[in-house]
Each structure stands twice: as structure tokens, then as C-alpha cells.
Image (cartoon, rainbow, N blue to C red):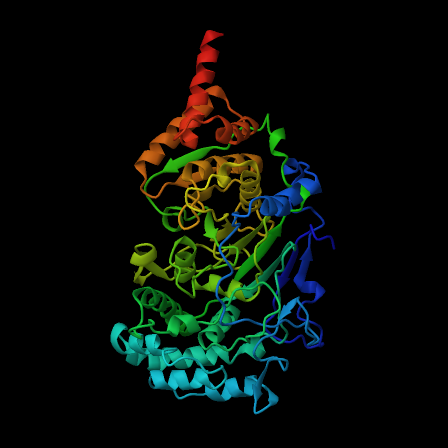
Length: 539
């Protein structure tokens, strides 16, 4: 199979009676079609792609293509289906290759986990003792935040220890039955998807809650164990307000999912586009600009229901969801906890890759953002299901470049090309999408918070990429009325002059050379469009 073709893998929940692999031919749907429809394909030399990936990084020492590698206290091993270690499959805690060193000997980890999770769980000390039975010793404040949450912050701790935590332990112990073989890693450079049932995802997250995943690391995967959420603040030892909000969201998921786990599944599709599959942006002279509606009110995850919802991601999927982060991606992962399962098997995203997450259920409302983020109650997802039993919700992760504040590198050609290719990778319809290709994309100020992107530039980049992918945009400015008015004016001028995607690309590149000091990207574009209007009137 070509690396450009899509391979779909449905992870079975029971061993095949014949003894065949769970990744049998009956569960693999291979498409001979390319990852991109011919109508969207254009050519680009492989050397041009390498320029963006390598030469730029060497030329500009201050370049920071993404957030630094997140701190990891939990890492993991891989194994193939026969149990041999490799980089293609995750070693699960129930695998015979998941071991611990005790008294100079390597012993199997799963029997320790089984004994520890048998309970009873009557108080925070019991929970700490269970997890400590199979993880390495840590600081005295390793679980103090969780104890504070249980004793002082949660309104019904008795219910948690009476029913919810024992149910989480029971779900975690289903691992050998639900995963008789391992989970394939969606590795860099592959175009493949993995589909998991809601029950399998519950099992993964239950093991993450009990921190059973191994610490041995062989690839570019983020951590998945919840241990960082349990720690107390360095000085006080108390649960931070941020961790409190996250724990409320996660327990909301566990309480409802352990009580009732519906049939259905979630698909994770890693899209990789090779250099020859990316547009030649200068060749879009006849490509009409995409339709774009700009809104100043509403949020992607609320008013964007029924659309393709963009996740302004970290290249390590989920970013700081299990750490100190609480911006757009982290919030999405807390209100849709099933997305966290992707951290177990999705490697660091590369420049022309995107991750499509289809079918996850939302469980929570929230208020605030970053330091003001708070959990604000239960959410009941009413999205319909598609023919595969997936909720019709599609969230697409694309990671923006990280820039130094005030840095103009983002306005230069290599950075613009990288962001165009990244947005295009996420805007092209997934072959396993739950929506039609006419479904609009709900997006906004991608990479414009902690990543220091310029909102006006990112708007132009996304508009060009959407045009190349033939997708309609619904753009949320997050209550920025000034930005809305400026974008609306620009879009009107584009429509009047019938500006094409190729012409807008040329204008975007020209900004860094021709703009006057202090002139913003959209102000520059409006200046150009005024000149165009004058020329049209003269003729």
C-alpha cells in the first residue's frame, strides 16, 4: 500500500475465534484513491518542501516552529502484534512486555495493577496507595491536589468513592478483553485511521486515570497518564483552580460513561500530504476565493455545531490538557474527554499533517479561558449518529507555528508557505468524514494566542487554503468587533474585484516588502484594493 493511500483500522474488542490478528483483512478498508481528489491536486517539487522544513530552520536561528516538547512524566513502549518491540504499536499495561523493576528483577506490571485496582476505594489515601503500587516514588505533594479536590472542592465525594472510582477501576481492568492485541501508532508520515468504540476509549482513559501506562519511551508521543492533575501547587500543596476545572470535567465524563456506555465509535484519522500533493500556490490565478462568513459572537464548539470544527492544536496532540494549559485545544479536550485517548497513539504532527477526530461526545459546559477557565456544568450532546455509529461531530487538529512576540518572521514566505500547507491539510475533506464535502469549516484566530500569530495574517492564510480546498469558512473573531468590520470590508472588496486565491497569495507575500511602517496586513490589502478599484474606474 502506498503511504499516500488511506488505511482504516477498526480495533476489535474480542479475540478472533480463529486466532487471527484483530487487524484482519475484514477490518481494514484500503482505498486505492489518493488522499486528495484530482481536482485539488497540484504539483510542488520535493526540494521546495524540504526548504520549508529544514533550510528555513537553519537560516533563522530564532525560528521556533512549535511549542517546545511538553514535559513528560509518562512515556510508553511500542510492540507489534506478536509482542516484539517496535515503533508501530503501543505496549499496553496488560502486555507481558510491560514490566517493572523490583529488587533487581523485571516483573510483569499487570498483576500489580490488578491487585491495586481491586480496591477498596474509600478515601484519597486508598487511591494514592493503589497508584503508588506500580509507579515510581515521587514528591510528597504528588497527590495532595487530588486529596484537596476530594475533601474540599467536589460537592459529592461520597458518590465518587462509593460508585464512580470503583467503576473507573473496573473499566480499567477490562483492558485485556477489550484490547487482545495492541493499538497501532498513527506515526509521522502515514495516512491512516484508527476507530475505537466508546467502551474502548473509556478503558484507555480509566487506565490513564490510574496512571498504568508505561514510562519507557520510543517515539514522539505526548504523555497520557493523569498524574500531573493530581499534584498540589508547589507551595500550598492545594489543587489549583485550573486542575479543579479539569478534574470536574473528567469526573463528569467518568460518572456518566461508567453509568451508561452506548454503542458507537470514534475515528482518529491522521492525514499526511506529500510534497506533490500540496498546491502550487502561485498557480491559483484562476481559483475563486472561498465563501467566508465572519461572526464576532459565538464559539466554534457551540455555534459551529454541524460544521467541521478546527482545533488550534499543539503539534503534540492535546497540548497541555493534562498539564497547565487551558486555551482552545485544552478546553476542547476537557469538554470532549474522548479526544484525550488520541495521546496514546498519535505521534507529533509534522508540517503537512492534520488529525481528524470524528465522533467524540461532549460532556461539559465551561466559562472563561486560560487562567479564568472554569467547569460550569453538564452538557448533553444531541448530535445524531452516522451509519457507522459515530456522533456527527468532527474536530480537526492543525498546529500553528510559534513565533516570538513582535517577530516578523511569520510574514515571510517560508512561514506563510508552511501555514498554508498545514491549513490545507486540515481543510481538505477526510476520506472517513461524517459530513459531506460541502460542510463549512468553523475556524477563527488560529495560533494567535500563546503562539503570537497575527490574526489578520492568519485570516488571509486560511482564506487562501480554503479556496484551494474548495471549502466554505465560518470565521469566529471571538468578540473582536473591530476585526469583524475590517474582515467584512476586505471580503466585500475581494468580491467586487473578483480577486482569486492566487492574487491574494501574491498580495500576502508582498505585504512584508511593500507595507508602510505600522500598517497591518488587512490595512495593506485594503490599500491595494483601493488602487485596484481606481484602476477599474479609469477603464
